[in-house]
Image (cartoon, rainbow, N blue to C red; front, side, top):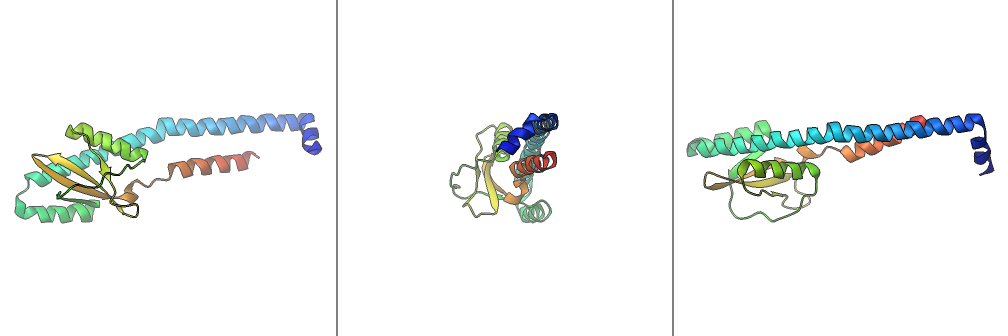
Length: 168
């Protein structure tokens, strides 16, 4: 402990401590700015885009002749990894506490004019589902959960750890 104390007593030690502290604060500030000015707006825009695509797809499904809906459903799943079909029964209500999903639910609610909830059948499910009321019907739309599994907190933590390692 005395060696560390003596190190801080020297001009070199104090300069190193000041530079390390400044770089650490700069790194934390940079991470904060990236989250606020880049990641959050991108997340909101991506949620808006997916909400628009879901609503447009359900509107298209409703307007198609019944004999062509199966082809449309197949095309949506194979090309866009989205499943659409007429809902039967209710989905279990489950809170999905991911900021992107909250933004998506809000964007869907604004487009449809009703409160929309996203559902996952169980914790192991690979699909997230939403019931979309449209044209007097309720369509169930699902998309793969891996579509939204960006590791933003992990990326931030790794950036801070790597930044600290470089600074030290």
